[in-house]
Image (tube, rainbow, N blue to C red; front, top):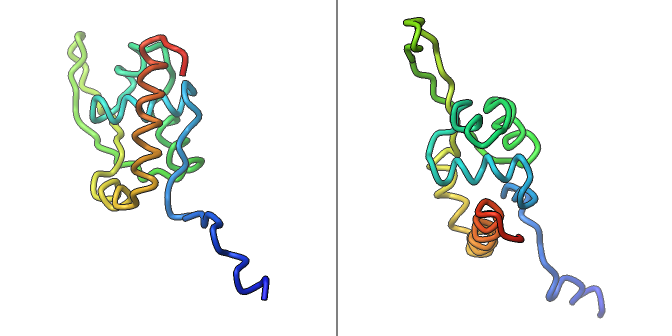
Length: 124
């Protein structure tokens, strides 16, 4: 009889949803920047004293399960040299799909609030 009710009240984890990075970690800061500035590139990361945007995007994708979109565009440096710049952001259609999960959406909002506080220099 006990087996009949063994799952009642237990939380079932949805493995299709991404992990939220630890607040104030490198992955958290990158995800925060993606949500607040759109595409993330090395220039934006250098403004906050962080490393390579490609590496951070790979960490979010491979370790945390986020769907990351890559965009490449041409840029002309001050010395006239043309270079290709890679920019990264959370894939929009995928994000819309996962935000349909109310519990995840609530956790994401709480995470964004805590990370925002950490970005402003408060205690998360």
